[in-house]
Length: 271
Image (cartoon, rainbow, N blue to C red; front, side, top):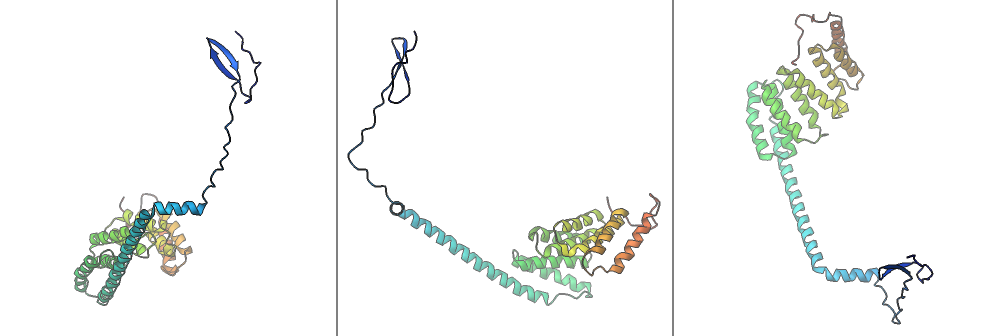
């Protein structure tokens, strides 16, 4: 049976109604909502709603304030405690530094400083002064040619200081020296590379020079020449231009040596 579409609708939309198995197109009249005669209450203003919320949640707000005050008090107490520790550590470190051996001191004097530094580190660990003491201890071990101990303490400093801390290049320098003195050329080279990547531009001259020396030890003369030339271009007075040019000249003579026939006594790095 066809569908009739003769009806009209106040809504403008036809409605299909199933009646006794037949589909009839009907127009559903939609009754409008009867408007009330009572006036709706005015919506609450923002300030009134805010005050209402405050009243309902006052206890929770007070509790939050108490928590914040307690946290602030704890933080303040921690900062006071930390500052007190730092001040105490600096004072003790200054007294310890006054007894620091001279560069020409007897090895026994350097040995005597080890237990003092270790005790200071135990007493003040976690302070900046303790980081200085760990760096000093690595220096003592280098002076006494106890290279494995120097590696241990230099590594501790590198792990503990922030990336741009001024102790970072000193610790890497000492670690590289300890590795090189132990015959670990690749490890030493790795420390200078890491220092270069860390962006301590003021050390570029020293970094490139040490990398050049180590590449020369490995008989990688092309890279050695490259690093010597970079060192000469870098800002700084150490090493001197005369030293760099002299060593560069020596490396360039090695490049003229037939491959596989290094000069007698040529040092080689570990692989």
